[in-house]
Length: 219
Length: 181
Image (cartoon, rainbow over the protein chains, first blue to last red):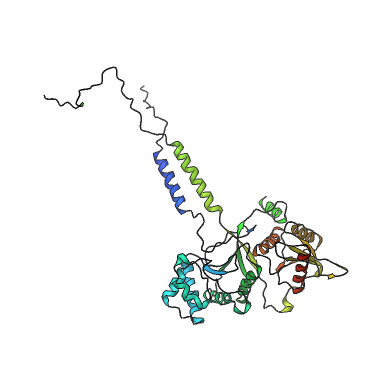
């Protein structure tokens, strides 16, 4: 009986293909990672033990910077941009601002709204690179008599009628409480009683009641 | 047949004693490179998902509710926390007494307030327990978040963010001044 000849094969595999795949994935991840999106309004958010990740759809975000200036922005999705356009158009017609279609388009493209209603047409003409938290005055909400956030939130409520927008509030550590209170007033006056505050995650202190609850649930 | 001499002008042929350069293999071992590649991939995968900001939920009380529909808090179960400037925290239990006979207005800080809350939670009935948070004009957003966070850390079901009264604000200012701040 003839024994079939088994050819001795080398055990080393050609790694080139694997290497290609690895580096392809690597370059994909490097390119898609946003290290820290360059923010026009720099904000240091406080830490909290909240573990729910901030939503990204149907977002209406108010940013409160360290000087107490308030800026309004929406999510980046196409639906959110469409809603932003609706909101601005609603305000335009309800407050007779006389914004042109080009102005509205420019404001929709802008990363945030940060001026009084009367100056909206001026903000529309500022190039996007120059729209920063320092350059713009913020939406006036310092005193209760002239709280324009109420107007904005009313428009949000009109546009999102029937559905719930995700109201986010992103505040800076050293922003003072009165500006926070004015934002709360604006929410409350328009029937928004639930909102979320953007924070950085923090671990739950050991031994606290929440910690006990978490460990009990894990068992 | 005519032969072409291709070996250069001088006819300098290598003799039998001259060693030929050994032909090295051009294949490189790519295993370490693959290792490095995957290491970096794992690094990027982890860093992308880890820095997601979280969101903290807060429900506001309805202003328009009629007084009779509002929840009444029992004085015995109430703990009022006041926030002042420079991360100062003050608290009192029940109703504020600030006369000559003595006061229940106490000073604290963000480290010790947790013990106060835990103590209060242990000594009162859960149904009566309510924490009232009153930040004054000079407290910061971080202070408010920290104290709300403290509520979720200690699993306090009922708490409210309330405007400060002028009396309490005055008391905070006096205490801050007397402590030399």
